[in-house]
Amino acid sequence: MISSTFVPNMKVLPEGYWSYVYWNALQDLSTSCRSVLATQRVLEGIGVGREGATAISATLNFIVRDGAGMMAGLIFTAMKASHFRYNVKKWKLFADCIVDLGLTLELSSTLLPRQFFLPMICMASMCKSICGVAAGASGGAIQVYWADKGSDISEVNSKFGAQSTITGAIGLIFSAMFAQSISKTGSAHFVWLIYTILTIVHIFANIQCLKHIHLDYFNKDRMDIVSRYFLDICLRDDEEGSIKSRGESKLKVKMLTPKEVSKKESLFFLSLNRGNYPIIFGASMDDLYAATLCSANDIVKQLDNRYIIKVSKVFNRRWKIIVAMDVQASEEDYLKAYFHGILLSTLIYDQKVEQSSTFDLIESKAAMICQNLWNEYKFLAIQAGWNIQKSALASHIERAYGLVIS
Image (cartoon, rainbow, N blue to C red; front, side, top):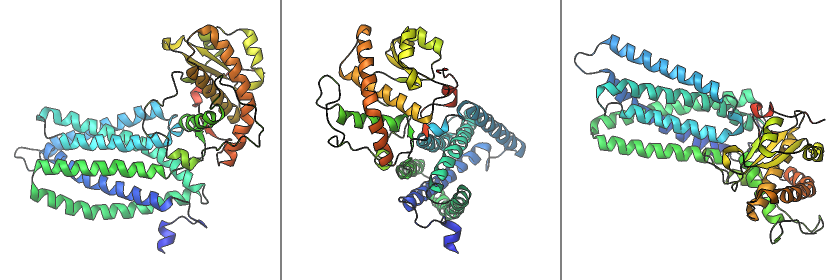
């Protein structure tokens, strides 16, 4: 009975499942306890226990607060709905951090003069609504991840729902005890100390949760980690940046697995260090020509690749690698184009190229090395457990600007 209610029906539960459940329950409990503190402050702010407070003023405050949250949720959805799948883990952690900000605003709402109370609870409601959108989108992708391990999404979703119900029930008990003990203490410093500790626990538990999610398809961060590790081995000790003449059986290159990469990839929206040459997908033909002044001969040379890749200094006055994709490009073509871009960036950065006249030679060398290495890279990636038929490298908007190369 217990197993059929809370555990997905799989022959063997995937590695890390119970650890994920444990850390997920812990972060839920910390949120429940902190919500009690925040709710107390909001009730104090609307006038509970204060002489002269009226029900209509409290109702209007809640209406304005909830309306602000609804608008924030709609605007955030309109802006970011197509971006969630490309950084599932980052958006999940973002959701948990933004709800922490919302709870902090609620807890702080009575510390400032009363005229700031309504704006603060409105901003808190906006943070919570944004959390709901981001957590719902990224949480759905995480449930798909577990379902792909041997169950189906509807069952995994219902079992996670049952687990959340139990966690919520336990959270209610702890929250009641917690609220009673806090009210007896009455020390503001003690309240903030407990709140800070619970917030740290919440963020730490979420990071531990995400480390047990080993997504097996490439996004920009994961492919950057894997490709640079691969290229570091292949190009090591070669002063000219070309591949040594070694047979396939002698070239013992270890490809990082999804589990290994999950421990290395960043969970925060910080700029990943890709040298000084960001890779830009989705350039139109006009933009590509304006940015790089590439000739028709350059296009003809790259027709077989389903993409065109050039170095440009036009955008923001920084060297960038511009990639224009064919509208009929496959997922593998996108992977190859990004690998080519990382390789080109590595060669330019390692050789400290600054003169545009030298880029033609580097681009030709990168194209040759990419052609020699790509099949081996693809083979090793499949062996390591990567799904090269699926990727999250370019958004639908970026793909919409593809070229017709045929």
